[in-house]
Length: 257
Length: 162
Image 1: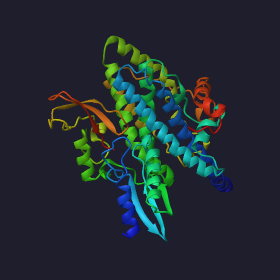
Image 2: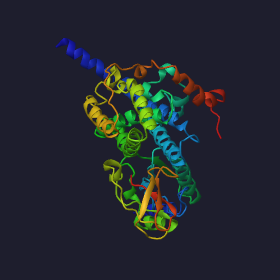
Image 3: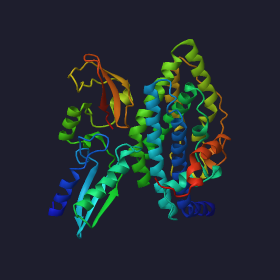
Image 4: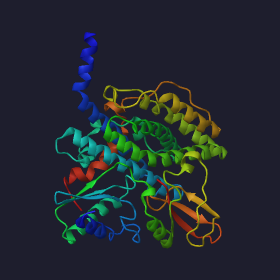
């Protein structure tokens, strides 16, 4: 009983720092994946898909802004959303590793987006009923956009998987290689405790499997997963993203148009 | 509604959307509330899509317009809840969209077809044909999808449901 009382008190004391970390985790996911997809701008396989990817990037970066505004309020040190995007280094970022892995070919980009969107959709559906009013508002707003993202990436998995022998082979490879990054979202870290929903994995597996089967592809079965992004242990790729993204604000601090 | 509030509404209804200059920010449902409290005008606006680049421009235009009409002191606040939906576009707004060549949203919330994978019939704003086809769920701005009319063969934008 004593231990229980202590741990409950512990959670209360850390409540704000947990809340800040959750806001940063969600904001970092959106920012880093948004940045990654935006790299397709001008390079998409066809114009319509170039536009689709930049639209998704815009939605995600807009969502990141809402989470960072919230983070700034929790932190209470007078920072704004740009501070969280441009003035933190690799170890401070809490995004899933899935969000930072390189675009690869179009199939890789689709596989990464598909795993992410399927999780993101379930997460935001749950957060739409969060006790945290602000997370609830952001989730309700973002969920409408993410519904379109999820449809787009799922359709492409089916189209490429159930396509030509070449597109099928490439889609299968992308689904397999990206798989090891798909499970980190379901491995909770301390700061999520009581703020983010748990137990989304079963529904995610079911939804993902349905699409992969419709695409006539094989569902990956390995259970071992890469992890670390949520606590700041990133792949070597994140540093390069930040170098590009943060160059201007760091070289010319507080520059305005 | 106080005199100040009604004056503010009429000033705000003159502000055009930067992307679709035939429709005002009031018609679009971006201006949520205008309330006078202890002599201060409090205006709440809401973003359409999270990443819509027009949001900042609209906020600046609201501030500029209220200043130009000498309605100080005022406060402009962004609210997220209830989140913006295409059902907040007024009937006259939907009519203006169609006149401008953008098919207005056909439903109240995120397209059911986005969930169910079913296609919905959208009427071509150019020739009125119902024989249209979605080219891409994502269009020239975050709020639009890209369609094509199979009768007049013209491409057109559809203001997709959110």
